[in-house]
Length: 410
Image 1 (cartoon, rainbow, N blue to C red):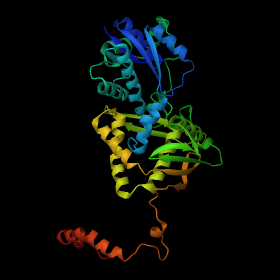
Image 2 (image 1 turned 180 degrees about the vertical axis):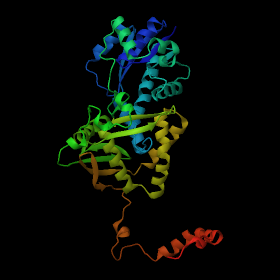
Image 3 (image 1 turned 30 degrees about the horizontal axis):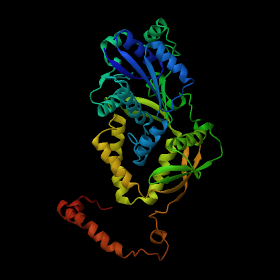
Image 4 (image 1 turned 90 degrees about the vertical axis):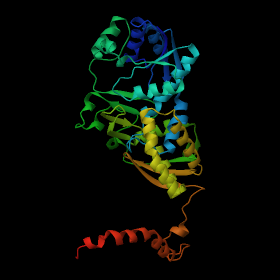
């Protein structure tokens, strides 16, 4: 028997787990509700429900600003997307939740950290790896990874029956077309009917942030995002906090159908899964940030960052936010982004983003050099020697390989 902190959502699974840990395992449970922007009609009801399940306390912690400022924006600076497309809204939020639970554990003297993630998914990795990095001595309790728990609760029907038996109020029903997870960065949809990759997933969810592109206005809308040292600082000239920037762009992008993604991804545990995501604000930020980098980063630095971005995306997606490799990469990107300052205006139209203008005091674009008109400051004669030097290895290889023998006369 131990004092346990539980990452608590107030939903069916974690409510049952509170009761299970108290009644079946004899633990003392502190539930931790971490606000990362998920919908919550009544936080007092969440606390009351936690108490009804047997928790000795319900700790409510607001981490929305920290989520955006300290996790989402550094990931944005790297242009990190898992498997080139996914903005990782869920992945980024999990270490924030786990960190809050570890902080509460230290406060209340807990020796164990529990969560309701399944043994098939990514979240178990993100919760556990974060907790172990921040407090290696904490015991990890993952009920879904135990035979005893799965035998007692083979499905949602049994969980609902258990909740009803113990007077735990639940909204869940045994049949559900899909599951969803929401925070201020995005909403994810998976499972249920979405497990069939043959169906058109984009048409399945009832979206909360965006309208479908075909239902967006027939008139385009422009938005300007300002950056300082690679970090977003303003929208349409108005200075905003990181959270306000994301929520403002969620509204603007959402009404224009921006930010819907349907993908089959490779989970860390090895299986493929299918998910549909909506992330209007972050989609705008990624596009604006990339457009500004095209103006302010030199070729070699941008290409190096692009080679490192998949590494960062994997670390975030897998759950290794707290490790020396990530610390080093974050130090690199802070230095690399020093001159990514300026304004980018995008045009939004029915799910599409088009650059309108890019401006920066650190712009490396020089029209006197780049012009295709006569004159300019670039001496084209220099290209002769440049290409002779660049082509030297190829010419030597050609003599040895005899590639010309394979040419056919036309």
